[in-house]
Length: 454
Image 1 (cartoon, rainbow, N blue to C red):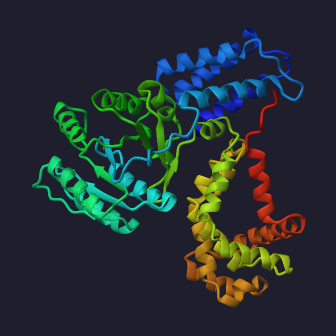
Image 2 (spheres, rainbow, N blue to C red):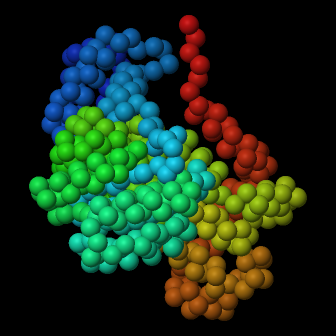
Image 3 (cartoon, one colour):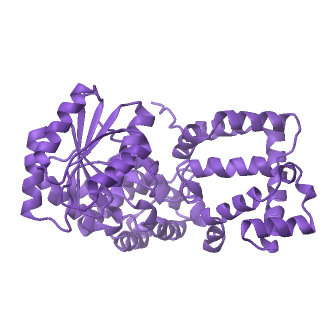
């Protein structure tokens, strides 16, 4: 997400250097490029105008301290304004209301609403240890109810059975009563989507909202529709008292216009981003962290938090202990690291959060992808346990067997062994200098906001 905008901004701000003060003249071209970058990212025109004016007013006359270049000073202004535009702070769900907390999900058909219900269920269960029940009031789309039942089973939450012959209002009322009986913490109600906004749809969801009086009313929208996503969210917000927005399919959105437009146009916070198809591909929306990603500074805090949640501590401790004893990093260790990385959302999700990733050539980035890591894992799985633990054994006939077993070529196996040898050297050097845990702690400390001096 934001790849195009990040690349364009990087080029624009890099050109502004050698000045002692930011003036209207020396930032004029930068602001023009910034405006074009935002429009190309499909950010709504009123948002672009307001944003550029805010940046201009804050930037002009700002002294450039000795440790910063004018480009860096403008980057700080742009980052702060981007964060302000998107809401400044993470707006969490209200989980303090009396149980069952009712969350009503609204959105157009095809926005990923039903899948998002499953993702949010898993998020509530794993991050907040809440008991969750889900129910479908979509009596129009064939197999919608069955789809939600299947997803509920997958994520391990309760499913309230409904039937397409029932009225949505009756389904929701019965589900709330059942949730109370079972002492469920949170009830998620999936509503019907339409191909477009119409009176019938709005009247139905208004009636449903009035009857269930939800704690949260979330609008689910496809981020790839750009500024149309913000306009659709506004139409729903005019009809319903929305409490927040969930942007889906952000992993396929290189522009990011929706994320920059929604808050400004609707006045409602973005609460979550859908970052993939799997049920764990949902992350809280932190405006300040997203602003850092847009300007190419990455999102180390989210990266560390994801690692702390997803990395198997037992496996990590075993690996650290092994390296401390002087035992080498082998293919079995590498295979475990690939699995851990997949649990963190895959290489694409991780790269998006790495500072300076926008400076890496596209060809190099294209070579590092989830498909390539899946091929590596397939080759490692085709090795015998002895080969995994003693990589130097892998010669001619063994390479051929591994290639045949994994559906790859001998050249692929050779490349894997070469890459692995390089990785072994890096791991050896890192373990000598400082432990992985210390590295993570140091990175986290550097990213935490410093206390201001008055």
